Image (cartoon, rainbow, N blue to C red; front, side):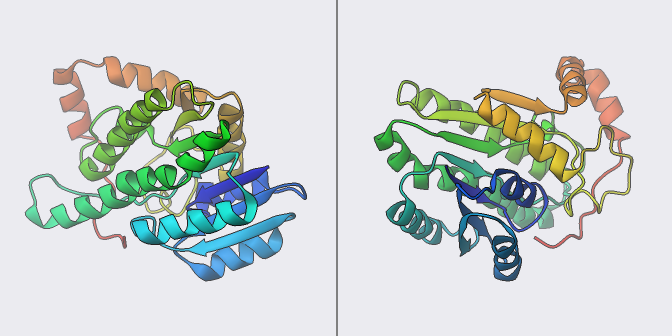
Length: 253
């Protein structure tokens, strides 16, 4: 099996790499930081190829995809898991640069990742392209407009891609996790319901991918909560969301 994962140096991406690693598996590991990638690759069974790059660098991503395919063949699975998050305010012009960065990584970076490998997989007539979205994409969260917008766009983009690849033999899976205990969420100063460990999240994500689910919300409790969230009338949602705790705005991107 040949698996490519972006955002592989920590959090969900690292847990997924450990989940799929086996003596018979070839992993393509993509993340910005070289040292964690090297340490991860050295700790895993099987073969690993590391590509230290930022997914917003489309030429570098294209070169990595070309290198992987030429060495190992078309992937059986590509997981676009790289993402960033930061608190933002829609009424502060200074936060527009944060918005641009979040969209560049979470949306354009995901799209470039899948587009870089899709032609080889389409030619092979098989494989799965998976994107990590979020339940934050179902409604606009106060104080997290950039992140919610990026995940809503991700959900819609993956749906479009699935329709475009219908009949090609290549599946498209959209995974929407709730809270997972990663560096991205540990900065939150509020209670996070149904919090999953990275390993448990990776187990459930891998199961959803294996089932080729079009849209998977993880865990099931968050799936129920998201149904309620989406069904809440706008006037009530506004009142509740306005009082919700917010993510810090001074995080590195």
